[in-house]
Length: 171
Image (cartoon, rainbow, N blue to C red):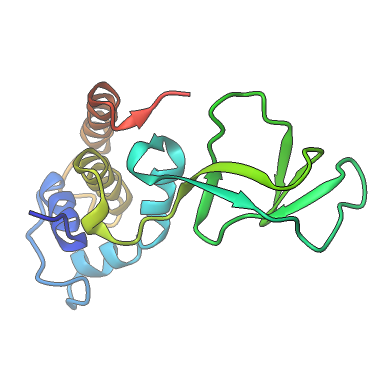
């Protein structure tokens, strides 16, 4: 069965002991707290680790603008790029805004972590870590339901399991 955003949100609510919702547009404190998390929290969890399902490769063409100093070339990052993910730490570049500056000549090959808005493409380990992170985010608004310490422990355990399962690439 494909993962859905609603299923991940309801998993997060379960972690804090809150009732399930029918939609993120429900007029309940739970749905409103969850809706406030998107898209920032999924993007944050994607950036935090090198999730294998979110890794992409692109060949970048030279941008029109040349850096004012320090680098000889500028390349525009792909629109869905959240972070660069070079295979080795030998890459000699800097990311500034939506540009990648380097002295490497065009074309530039880039490996990166992409935004993944389609929940049906999410790795199950990512969905679990995301549910834990969402629970941590909404916990202050719904503080009476579960302690932050227990949610932190669940989040760390989910990340550990994702690493052990190979869902996260270690750099």
